[in-house]
Amino acid sequence: MKKTAHAALEKLKSGGRRLTAARRAVIEALAEAEAPLSASEVLGILVKRGVGADRATVYRELEALSEAGIAVTVRFESRAARFELAGGAHHHHAVCVKCEAVSDVEADAELEAAERRIARRSGFKVLRHSFELFGLCADCR
Amino acid sequence: MKKTAHAALEKLKSGGRRLTAARRAVIEALAEAEAPLSASEVLGILVKRGVGADRATVYRELEALSEAGIAVTVRFESRAARFELAGGAHHHHAVCVKCEAVSDVEADAELEAAERRIARRSGFKVLRHSFELFGLCADCR
DNA sequence: ACCTTACTGCGACAATGTCGCATTGTCAAG
DNA sequence: CTTGACAATGCGACATTGTCGCAGTAAGGT
Ligand SMILES: [Zn+2]
Ligand SMILES: [Zn+2]
Ligand SMILES: [Zn+2]
Ligand SMILES: [Zn+2]
Image 1 (cartoon, rainbow over the protein chains, first blue to last red):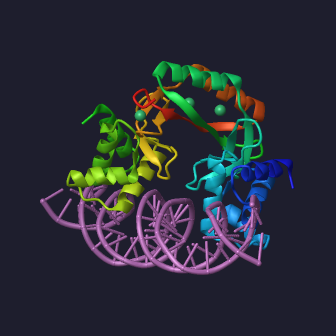
Image 2 (image 1 turned 180 degrees about the horizontal axis):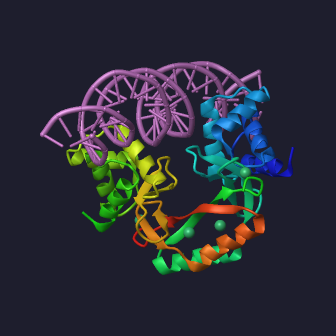
Image 3 (image 1 turned 180 degrees about the vertical axis):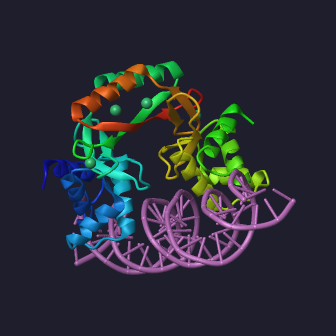
């Protein structure tokens, strides 16, 4: 089990949450994924591992992880929300519209500075933002 | 009817498309909206105006407008896709998480420059991007 | 071992689309 | 103006993505 997964479990326990098989499996699935996963993808992984979990449980778990700040929700162009563990640094994604590959994109200092400028100009208090790139990856272009 | 709506209709006609009541009504609804609309919101407007249109028709129309480059799709945090006419300058949105108000955010030159830098660094060919702010508007903060 | 209550499974339901097919309506060629 | 091609529509069935209430289960502190 990855360190990120371990840290996530600790964080959960200290929040009055319990440590169940389904929870552990969801966190591990996210920890081992190389791209944000949808609820149905998580469910598929659990099933493949013999951890029978209900659809509703997976949804509830992902929501709980998001609320606890352990996972973050990202939305690409498809309908389903996707989730990834929040362990690492703030970053964004580049999604290939042909092969669906997702790669992380480091947060650019200028980018975040632009966001703050925009916020100041508009009197808007930014709580979070999304910034995702859609196009062709190096292999597909 | 707004100029943008008129231009959109022209653009459609020159693409072999036909000019129907439903199409005109959908375009007008988008042209008069102050924020991107979901399919069900568009449908609601059509109904209120006495233009009976089927759900499927509205979805198909919005998809066609997007494909033709007449409308752009934006996704906020809710599940439904939203659409706005593409007439104006490239811009982004600030969405209030409390009152749901949406305001346009001018594209910041630095922001778009950061995007190009990111693309260059990663070998990724960017076709389009999303950048949306979520937080509290001036009234709600 | 027991109690509390977080968590789960089940099933019903809601929201958002998508699709095939028969019918209708546009529009331009004749 | 009529008419034919085919774009567009309505209808209905179905798929995906969630959400919710409730009764039963089980985690973990005592
Ligand atoms: Zn690719
Ligand atoms: Zn960022
Ligand atoms: Zn507000
Ligand atoms: Zn932009």
